[in-house]
Length: 403
Image (cartoon, rainbow, N blue to C red):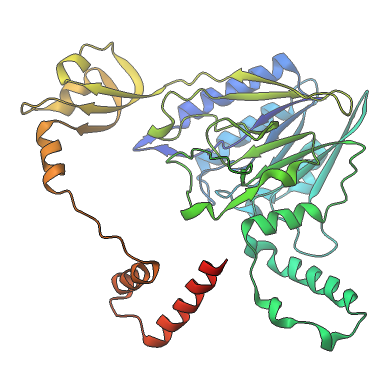
């Protein structure tokens, strides 16, 4: 069984002030050409199809053309996709039952009721069947009611139907991202004697691993949206989306394919590609190969004196320029535009700027969490925290310290 793993298309995205329509069409055509050459049994798209929940007509047309071309390939490739955090789950899933007849399988909305489960697509090869689980992006709030209901039922059984013995104090507790994702996967009936693949759009981490996140991604404080990747060990391959840099998560077969294009300056010089995955019989090592995607325009960082940078060859690449000249510069942008016609930003960093930074350097006072929160409260609400609120906050912080 051979399939492509792609994701984070972000169709409709702009890079600074530049429309990426031409760049995205260029790279999607490369994916189509690889599909014609390699003839994969399936193409898995790991979420963030669009850059916005309400995509423009132009963005919809770009993806519609790509999907049409992909579905009309002579070797009848199955197409599977899920919604990411940038997508509207409801919009993406529109007409999915009709599209399924054309081998296009879409999972936009997560299970909400007890009799609903993660969408499963079953394909077969000479070694038997492969089960593909299409698990869209979730926030804990999306599945809270479902998980609470199932949790209460389990507790009800444990007390032999004696409702008065239930500890209802747990009913109001929330779920973390990790708990929600782990619980949703755990409720699936996964046959580990067969080959299983999961398509998921979340922020997975393996134990103490750190993954660099780009400026084009939504970054949370303290990685509160992270999920322990050990819940993926039941699968032969985990096709992940959400992180824009291609990266392994602990195991070789738990992979972020990365975005199809660099979508921020922090992704400059990153090598993008398609992951081509081949499953053999159960128990055999998964084969993973990267098919490189070459952008129409690269994202590059340049730094140095203006005179030296102007000696560069003319280029249509997207460039971030850091100038280090000490003397006063005139008509900088006009001069640079003669060489680079897609300038993302021009920054200046010389001895004068460094001196200003040094003069304005502030010695930060180390504060306790309570004082930090009180200052934050004052700044946001323009009033001081009440004594009652402070007492509640102290109690919470003490519980955190105990843990």
